[in-house]
Structure formats: structure tokens, C-alpha cells
Image (cartoon, rainbow, N blue to C red; front, side, top):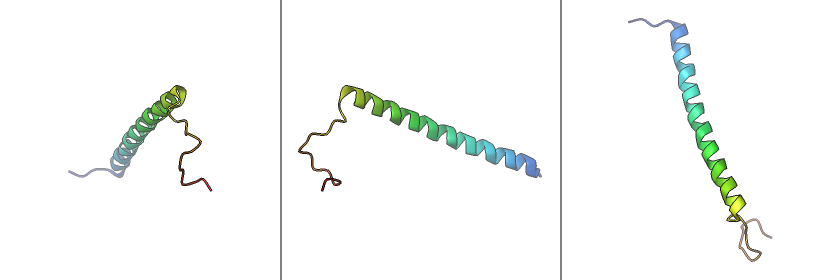
Length: 55
């Protein structure tokens, strides 16, 4: 079976958009978790925390 270039390009675009949709859903879940933690105060660092960015 011979596939046209147009079909192959369309198929590659579908794969690209499927991956992009999955990544967006992953991002949305992570942001929702972050917002929940921030609203509940879980992300608050204590003043004596040892952060690698503290100098």
C-alpha cells in the first residue's frame, strides 16, 4: 500500500497534537496540585529551612 505525503504529514500532525494534549493535561494537573498546596499553606518554607539558594 502506498501512502501519499499528505496522509503521512497529517498522521504526524495527529501524533504531535496527541503528545501536546497529553503534556498539557499533565501540566494542568501539576498546576492544580500546586494551587491546592499554595492555598493550604503546604508550600510555605520555614525561616530556618536549608535551601540551596540561601546564602
